[in-house]
Image (cartoon, rainbow over all chains, first blue to last red; front, side):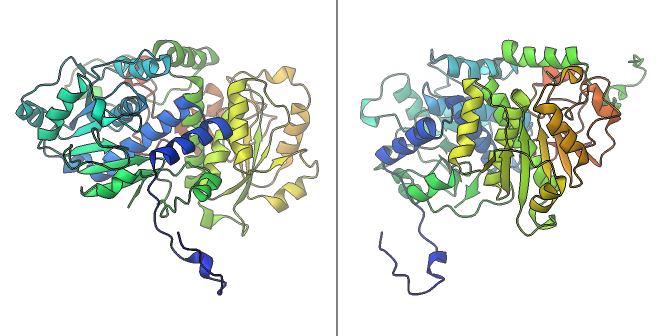
Amino acid sequence: MEKTICNSSHSKEEIQPLRYLSRAEALAIDKELLEEFRFGHQQLIEIWGHACAMAVTKVFPRRSLQRKQPTLLVVCGCEQNGAVGLACARHLRVFEYEPTIFYPKRSSNPLFRDFTTQCEKMDIPFLSYLPAETQLISDAYNLVIDALLGVEATPGELLEPFSTILATLKQIRIPLVSLDVPSGWDVETGTSDGISPDVLVSLAAPKQCATRFVGKHHLVAGRFLPYDVQKKFELNFPEYPGTDDVVSL
Amino acid sequence: MEKTICNSSHSKEEIQPLRYLSRAEALAIDKELLEEFRFGHQQLIEIWGHACAMAVTKVFPRRSLQRKQPTLLVVCGCEQNGAVGLACARHLRVFEYEPTIFYPKRSSNPLFRDFTTQCEKMDIPFLSYLPAETQLISDAYNLVIDALLGVEATPGELLEPFSTILATLKQIRIPLVSLDVPSGWDVETGTSDGISPDVLVSLAAPKQCATRFVGKHHLVAGRFLPYDVQKKFELNFPEYPGTDDVVSL
């Protein structure tokens, strides 16, 4: 980024462009939050899950939904992204949506198991399989939330059941909301052959792949980030409205 | 509570009175959340800290404050209530208030220590002592948040430094916001000789002492509670507006 020569006392007010993070930078922010600032995994997942649910309520208010019932399907992977999906589903239930979860490969991590139990005990239904016939999905749900793969995933090495699920998600014709990194995309280069979400919710800050996002709504859930982290990584967020924990770009 | 005879199909819509919990019921809800639903302590503290900060923004929007600087003082105890105060201070910082924390007796619980570190690393100032001269407090801050003592406390057995701090809080003439149980009050019987908060934010659900609260604003941070818990304990919350995690009674 060019250095600005301070020939005016107002130069610091110039609007800087939003930053898109490389994989290494995204991991460096996580490390800083966890090790330096002593945030907990549970805390971060809760914060992001809540923010993603807020994002869904903003883009798809209940009264705007196509179907009478405010149904939605949350597809969760076995890493952190999936746990954020579980927390998001729980908050959406609290906001009076009707989430159903598809969580084909459950993590043995006790932390993720607890987020699963919270959903199960709140009577959120879990699908035992994802219909290959996408019309069945379109008939049953207003939208699908993709919390399958995140920053950790390496698209070239996708194993089952994830490659089959991705093939199904690619054919879906109802709105698709991806959390952080659209599943199947490389975190840096994106993809031209993956799913094509309508909404992207970046966790902490946008990753480089988000520059290739062509959907309608891109939101960022990074308000909780300490000012020093925002400054160090030059995140240049726009102003978050009111007490919202997401902002639209 | 009286049973209603179902002589009308609409009888289930009748508004039931809000429930005020005994100490045993409050502990039973905590136990259910932690053991049955597998919520984590860290998660609950984060949820409540955020909700308390939201409550403060609702009752005291920044533009409504007396002083030019949106300063406030958060007084934290060494139990869970204090940790919620720390999380609340952090969220208020994010909402562009200027919190200062007084946390005289730090917990050795690693969980609470992490919430402390988050505040310290975000450059929230910590006071090393509380001025006995309350005019100094009134001159420096717009309001004080009392996160000193919660459900666990037994008012008759108060040790130092808490009794001195309570004596100071009683004399404060700027608005006082108490979290869950006003410090020095018995959780069930309340008190006639304690502090007199202007705002009370009940965590999960109101405790019996809240029936003796005579301040202006009583808010409840219980939206996240699973429906089955709300029903089992007959909490009868009013409807939470929008995506807010607090509601005014």
